[in-house]
Image (cartoon, rainbow, N blue to C red; front, side, top):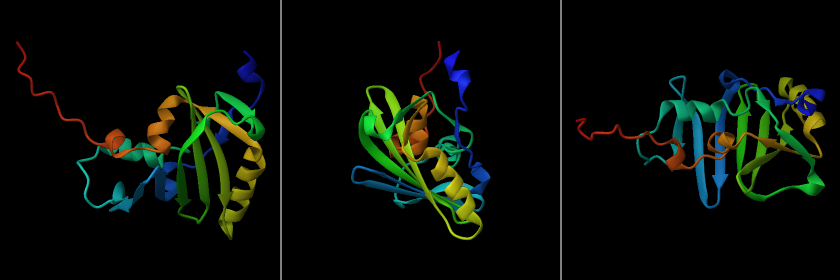
Length: 161
């Protein structure tokens, strides 16, 4: 299997290291932070009830992130659909630009940080500079979610025969 010829891991930022996430998708901006130690949508303040597992996925989006394909930036597939700015507790910031090509999701990463976060940011940039990575299509809802993608689903109240 050619996929086994190279290291498919892109990034590994455990969710317990994420302090906040800001998602921009079109005109919509969603701000996520930890509230009482749990992932929460802090802005917009008015929103429907949210699924706690889908909220956790936003904080988990870079944990064990692996690729299914890779292209040089010059051959960037798809059109941009949004960005995710992930800030870790030690101060590293990872900007994830998300592209969509048909059903495929592609991402580009850029990291920055000072102090203890600087070495981790430099390592991530060294690995990802110049590349666009295809990730599982399900990552769209974790990296650039919409309110609809993270809202709680209502239980089916249809009477069973």
